Image 1 (cartoon, rainbow, N blue to C red):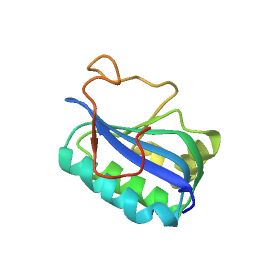
Image 2 (image 1 turned 90 degrees about the horizontal axis):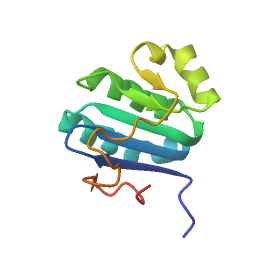
Image 3 (image 1 turned 30 degrees about the vertical axis):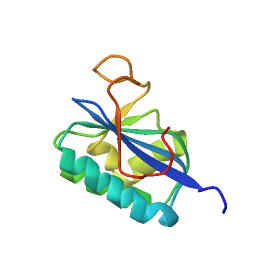
Image 4 (image 1 turned 135 degrees about the vertical axis):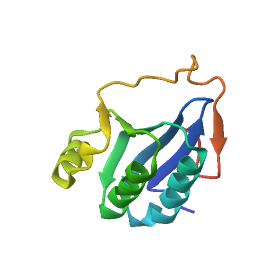
Length: 126
């Protein structure tokens, strides 16, 4: 079996949720990303979307980010988006409903590895 082209992982602390995306976020990842976004929204916590390792993002991935932005309790924060992701956010005006962070803020609970619980089966943990 071949390696997945893209990956999605949901991690949570007591006060924030992190959606970690990597690789090619395209139609092949749509169902998995949709399930992850639904999980994040059900938690009802502020959410960070780590997109540092995204190499490609198509309209199916963007639509999931729109769903996240319109359903989240606070404005989602994108962590260190690559230039092409920033460009897509600007062109689609998604940057008006999401905050862009130039560096990883870490988790407010201290050590990012402590207290994290991985939700669902969204590929391997990052």
